[in-house]
Image (cartoon, helix red, strand yellow):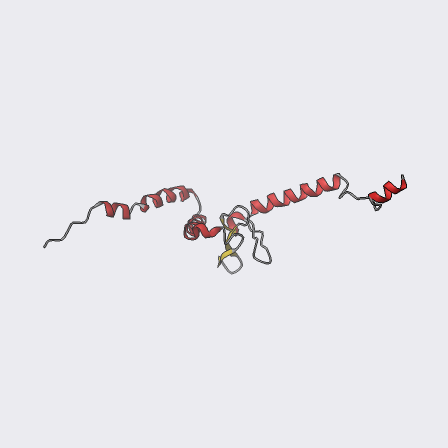
Length: 141
């Protein structure tokens, strides 16, 4: 008995992702080599983690030593849920490692907190209630 021939479409589908990689490489061509590498690793983390990004929000994924003094950190931002790197996106590190934020989200959060504090100060702070109860007022009348 003869063997059945394999269709050529399966080979095409198998290597279809190489076209996507070429497009991504063209996007990163104008960046420095190290930054392009970090972008590639961030994309790989996002693809690898997939739906688990929500579960790992705010957590550090990996620490790398760039040279003797500089440490790079890959993490998932607790607000925008993007995979970020400390050198590219900034890092506002949480001591408990539960809510690490990228620079943009940390800046927006600080601006929102200062606006809320300014609004509370402008209104005179929290409203104070009289120590007299309504029953005492009714009895006094």
